[in-house]
Structure formats: C-alpha cells, structure tokens
Length: 227
Image (tube, rainbow, N blue to C red; front, top):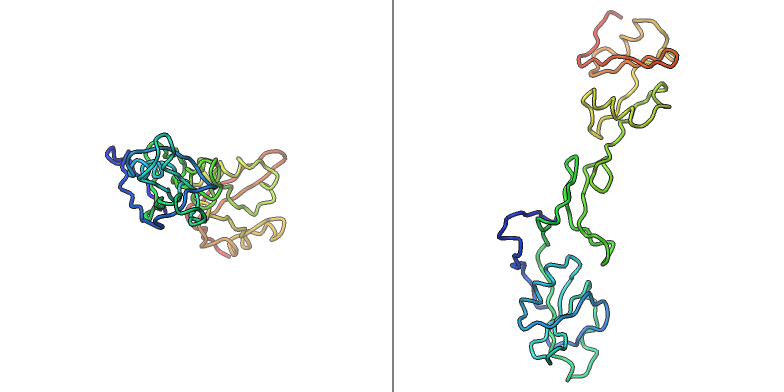
C-alpha cells in the first residue's frame, strides 16, 4: 500500500531509489510519457519520480544540445537493442521502492477512506484516489452504505430513510445487518410468541405502521418476559 506523507522536507524528496535495469541500450521509440534535455541524471530521475505513471527512465550522458537525453515511459517492456551501435549509449533505470502520495495530492477522503496511487487506468487518468472502507463508495467515500433491514414496512421507503434510521440507532457500520425475529403478520400477535422469538437478543428495533404513519422504538437492552 502506498504511504501518505506530509513532512515539508519530503515535499521534493527524490531519495526514492532507482536501479539500473539495462545499460548501453537504444533510445525509446514508443510508450514515451515525455522527453526532455537535462545536464544531470538526477534531474531526469526527479522528473520520473514526480510522475506517478513513470515506470522507468532512459538517460544518455553524451548528447547533442537541444536533443532529448531523458525519456520517461510507463512500461519496462521495450526492445532496447533494436538500433545501430552508434545510436546506443542510453542507460535505463526503474524505481525499486513504492511511491508515496505527496501531501498536496492527498484527497479529502471521508468515513475513514485513504488516498492511494491507482495506476490501472493508465496515463491520462487521475492516479490519486480514495480507497474506501468496505461498503462505502463515491469519489471521496462519501456515500454511506444502506443497512440491510428485512422489513416489509420499510421496503418501499427511500434509501436515506434507512440511513437515517441507522444513524439514530448508532449502527452505521456496513457490517451491521438487521435480522427479523418477529413479524405479527407471520408469527401472530401473542405476546408470548414475541418474547419467545426476541428475548435475550439485543439491540432490537420495533417498527409499526398505521395508515401512512411509521413509528416504533429502539431497545439497547434485551427483551425479557414470561413466555
């Protein structure tokens, strides 16, 4: 997992290690992210480090002025030796440590979400995204999961109705799923049947509908009664 960092001294840190993968190779001809001319190799490394999709860079020390000697690429799959000997002299490096999320790229993720670097959509997409806890969704994990309630009364209500119910009962976790213990239309109206099925189970929610009105109650402690 990519790690976030916010220390000022890390803002332009290029200490991420690069390893020499191939020496005395050809210039890249495809899958090039960008090209530039630099006097020093570490400037090319910095450019690669600052671009999340950069999987490596090709650098040539001896170069002609105004000719690119730094090539960034998003893949290491190249034909590095398909050129004349005179065109070789490039050295290809690739990073060997996980990238970190720069402080200024951290998203305002909600509900415990965390900013990660996501590269599967390829160059051109935003690599910085929120990774959401189970059940939460949205670009910023702002969409709260709707609790599962086996209720005929609530089945036709808007989704935010259940979300508000969960917030009132303190069960906003996506792992919470309410299970039916008693329904009058199925189990009958006898009190002893209710207690037989619902005693010693907590917490419980009682939902009642009369006409267009819905009301009920929440019990944090278990029901206990004579059966």
